[in-house]
Length: 331
Image (cartoon, rainbow, N blue to C red; front, side, top):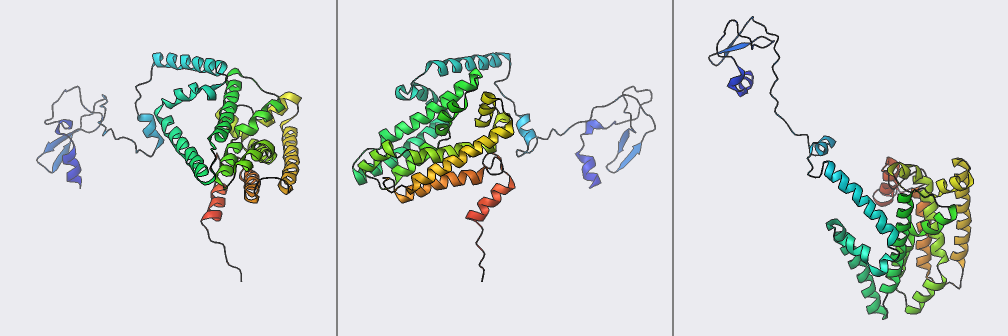
């Protein structure tokens, strides 16, 4: 083994012969190679430092140092100036585009990005598949209804983007009126509704008269999310949540704001239970169960913090117990 290590060192690293008075000697004992197996240590020591050769090994690809070692072609002052200019252009777009979904200008711009094309393609295929099934089975077109749901969601995102870039802190009512939509629960429940066997009359009644159940479920999801994630999301750079908006508007403490949000959740649950038990509602019982379970899931997921964005062991254990682990049999 020692012989292999010795022969692996480049020959230029060794001094072939000992010269007296040579200035470029190592500060450690120099070696003279004799044959293939003998090495004689010299007694001459020099203060000059020799930079040792390095193998220049790259860090493993699964470590963070690997990402840090990668080079980017987009570094430099010119690219920093371009990034600042693009931020200003985005702000102008958010201020000037008032009706982006109908004109589809902003969507067309985003679709030019490669990674967005995959997202929009999957979304386009899924929605059209739902619409085709409804058209084939029940004879009516659901695309206009789903388009409205997605338009409202994207508009709510634009409102939050305006607040973020302008530094505006909305009132509690302004936030709630927009946030129950931006949590995406109305879009989720709309797809659930149209994926079931519904008729055209049921669809129209749902869209006009039975939105209270969707509103309540969305509100509980939003407020539970704010209670559990507002601290982490603000650190990541997000808009103020319901707690911060209430504190800014009333001047109360964070503890009092959290208490007010919990009170609002309780009141929304009472209203949702009333909507669930209404006999004249045109919604099916299965859809009511889904809307109710969405609110239940929200409070379970965010009961002890950000159970969705922060991958702690407690959330993993819950998922494993629900989907993987077998239920023990008690005799």
